[in-house]
Image (tube, rainbow, N blue to C red; front, top):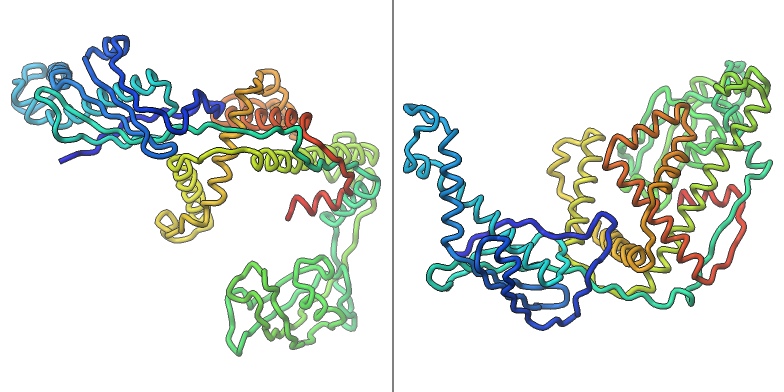
Length: 481
């Protein structure tokens, strides 16, 4: 009966380049190369055939003697250090060592040798293997031989249309005095203080109110529809508009019942599109007081100079960094989407499945972080993530092709500059930079970011670009959408 043997797969390099192209219907390939056969210390026949699109099947036939010799070598090595009751170390009879460890050693050797054979054969045939191959032992091998079938996918040929004919919109944005003032107002709101209003006062905009409320749909309470001593500021948009308006002009101790229709796209799906009857009681009304913009206010925000001019300069600097970051992200997405639309390629199913699995695990990790019980076993349908996974894989392959074709790799200088820019907005930039440099995974993420920027800059220089100036508010709204 055929058995599965796990073997390491060949993937793209660290820059996600596609590598050597494989014709869509490559003819059957028969390999018997002394170079790699001698490297492995075995005589072997390898046969590769195309199944469909990106799927290939490789048949490996190798001598049983090679497997057995390696098993004997490893068992002898193991016998020198294995500990078994009743025997001194190094004195355990080989038949006992073989009886106890023979199966596991044989399995390891099979994996190693078949894996080596597969990798060498794939390299010899110039195949770029996508994902891990599925390898199984087959029946009917000649005497003294073992035969295996490896089914796998290869990375596709990526064809990109003439990008000089692609039209794309590029946004630009300036930090205006109005956006600067709005940010200062937000900072003031964060430092505001409150005083209790008189008994006859009516709740008005900017007042902080403390309320009890309970909502019912068809006479039944629902999750999240009831609270006591709940605080919010009128007019800030934290509550639904109907709720906010209902509390306006209410007095201390007053109660009111009113209908509230939840939007169809409300985040709470169980109440979305439904109408609830709410009863609200006002328990406290407080007037808000904004601080003056002066040196004391600047110091309270930790501005180094402790002056209003220093505060304005710091706010402008941060806003410009934020605008630059958001413009880069938005324009990058627009340009890369246009590029992907102009690309023709088949997607390796194995890579798409790996991306789906990764996203499902990330979703389960998030559920666990939120305290959901048994989150690691939560049933999450794959189809939810398939469109996003396919887009990610497609983008990676297209970007890889652009990097390979136009030499858009990230340089050490670019990576260093990117880290310094990201660290500059923190209080201790050198510590943040060190945090990146000490972790290879973080460095790889920065490298990927720089590569995407290189590709974006290149294709925008080639595409038909129309620029549009947008306001600060519009840019912020687009980012949130």
